[in-house]
Length: 119
Length: 119
Image 1: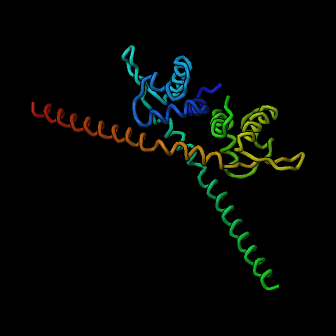
Image 2: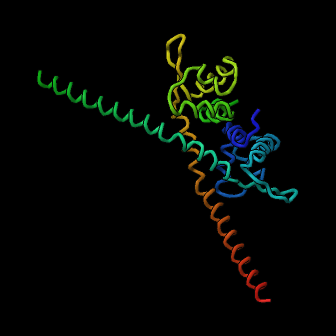
Image 3: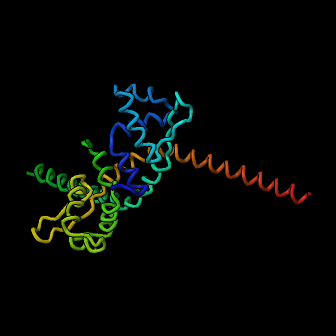
């Protein structure tokens, strides 16, 4: 189904283990066994996740047959950030509205509290 | 599989039609038939996409039985932006490296061009 580049990226990121792998790789290269350790996951299970990440261009792997360290490739994450950025005006307006609402609420409550004190 | 909030959001965004629906809703509320028009898609097909977006909290729908306008809810998109933002340092470093590389390349080529001219 997901054939375009951005859809592949989003699909690859729709899994907490794969996002945790990227978080680990953010601090440097890791071998598959190093990556598997914190998840208490089998190597084949981790390898499957790595293949999804690799196909989406989110990681790249070294060529050495035995020790193939993985490294993060942040280009597709930048594409995600650029995509999300287009909606910034909308979520900021939403938060502005919430701010206005909370502000009005505070004013009303202060006014009510004033009334109660006057009684 | 995808049970956490962010995974649901990423899964919902992993489809070009659903992203195009969000892009349409960015300019204002739309009914299902208005949304279906540009895609030459059946109403049930569009409704299925809308359900995925609604479950992920990316859209909300009006309550009027017949005319249930959809509106965008950008909160989950902000979460995506916040998630991606953590990797900014990495893609900027990568682009810096590319910049350095292209700079070096230009210098080398300028030098080579100079040699050729001197011959």
